[in-house]
Length: 434
Image 1 (cartoon, rainbow, N blue to C red):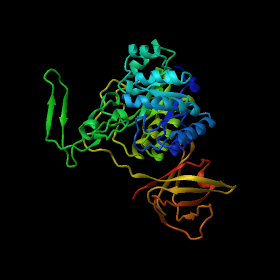
Image 2: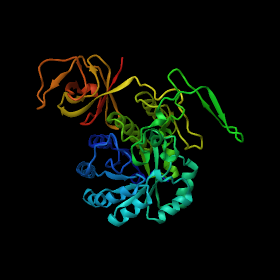
Image 3: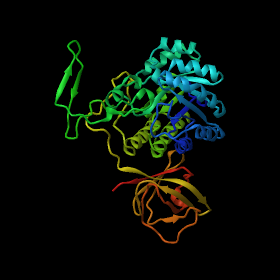
Image 4: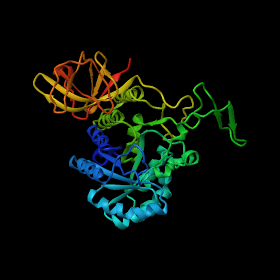
């Protein structure tokens, strides 16, 4: 695929709630995926209902962005009884596409929303050309390929089916089960991952002795190791493909998908901002060592500014995905500490109002994640507090905390501190922990 076809490509981000939807779009996502708990494989940490789905879709469409509704559970008969009513209600929301894995739900979607495109969910395990041909014959306009699909296989599928859109995960958590179809959660705590209620037992600490499992007819070994913190033998590393975007574009990927509907606004700002900048640099014509240096910088940001389980390129290059058997996740020195709610500008300065998340103290190094992933570093000596009406209180404060009664703090910064970088409502702040 030639790079000039930029307009046909998209950065697709998760939206676990309305504010996360706004954050993702503010940091450069071209489209978001979301759904209500009952049918979207996200029962928990998901407060969308029909009303907020409508508000979110309208908000995105006003900005020229797209909204994909997830209905990607593997349904039982009881779910099928409720789906027609839900599908009829989606007519008013006007989604740009539905993300579905269950053939029965696909049939219902065609019946009740015949004009809406259907994207095949990665849960459907489409990992080969013949499977892709089958689904396109069923009217599927886009296939979200399984994470097991290699770069070589992507090229082969696109060459044989040039009209079908291909979507591929580029960042986020990975399930140890095949394309996420796991039964461990159902086994351990009777919560079905295939109905959106996964308890994530693959991230749990297990007790083991030191063993090595080896198949009699194969050289591959699986080592069971227990460290002092326990054993994490099922814990996959997280996916990170920021260094492989150009290869994916040339292979024919249409949509670059970020995992993480349960993740924070800070995660979205960091990941969406990084990948948006990377894609824009590629399409801007940056090449060679200059592009390599930029991608290494953005990769370093993802490595050091987020909590993750260690990174891997997964199966993209034909390698086996990596396990992180030492711990559940790493710890970052940086922490989400606020999100901008208002900005006032004049010729000399910018005043930013931000809602506090976690603890924030005067004298700490803060970073504001700006447009195009431009980073603004500040070290405030003190803060002012804003009342609910936006009026400033006269007394300076040096420490504030997040939580239910989170304060809105105010900082006035001289324009020279911004160096031409833009702060905007929804911009995220992080602090360097001491």
